Length: 181
Image 1 (tube, rainbow, N blue to C red):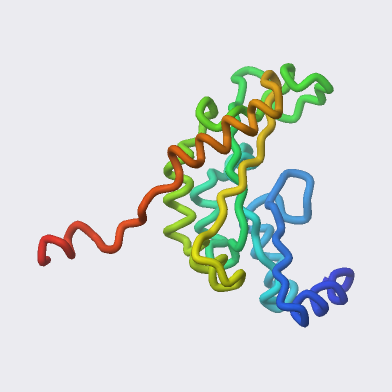
Image 2: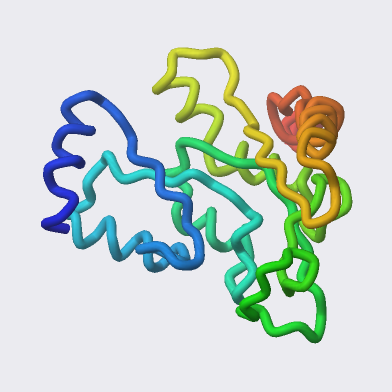
């Protein structure tokens, strides 16, 4: 808390959100860790989250994680991964194909990316982003990484995948409202 006071004070003064990507090896490796950091910093409003579901591979699923920190999600990545069964998760392998956890192109990973986009809507990410940035839409930032595929091709595939599968008209109400319930 003491080490970050100066930067947090400056961020608040400038109206900037410091978006932490909850990630293995950082100060907050799960949602509970992040919420403890916020609590230790007296609820500092400058502390925010960059949602990235591809780092939820040690027991905390992405839906649980982002629901726990929902009001602090101001940015996001769209990234997918697979876990190779039978390979130790923390195995120190310098060659990516030998690792247990591997990033993939968006369509072939283990995550349901459409459900992730829906969760971002549900937790209010687009509204918060648009309010802070003064825009009419919120970005879905493709973060491309792959153990096997060329990164430029992975990026192009990701951008097309987001355009074709994750950008959709948002419902204006529920089915029940439309039926007069």
